[in-house]
Every structure is written in structure tokens, then in C-alpha cells.
Length: 79
Image 1 (cartoon, rainbow, N blue to C red):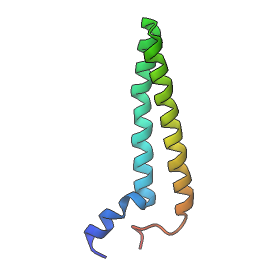
Image 2: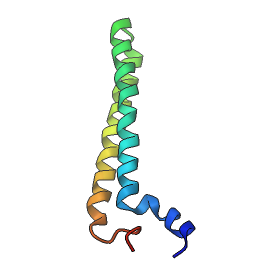
Image 3: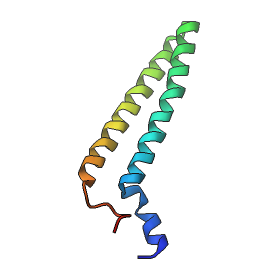
Image 4: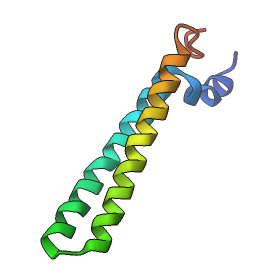
């Protein structure tokens, strides 16, 4: 298997899924800042936007966790 084929399979690997989960969780920092600022400014629309974004992050993490469980032992990068 060439390096390029391994790189293409990275997102389907256990490591790639962990990286995706970390990137998705990192988005929670921005959402928390947005929610805090919205509460201080009493901006209902931005607060709703932050809540919807938080729900999207939770859903994304749940999907990635499910994918991680499905991968099991047949990791693409391990051969």
C-alpha cells in the first residue's frame, strides 16, 4: 500500500477519528466564548445561535464516537 493510499484512508482510521473528535471539541471553546458574550450583552439571537452550535458539536461528537466504535480492530493504518 502506498503512502498516498494510507493518507487517503486516514480519516477512516482510529487515529483520524480521534483527530476529528479533537477538532470538533476545540470548536466548543469558540461556542462557549460566544455564549458568554451573548449573555453579557443580553443578545438573545446570538445566544440561540450558540445553543444551536453547541447542539451541532454534541451531535458531531456522538457521530464520531459511533464511528470509532464501529472501527474496532480493523484499523486502516495498522494494515
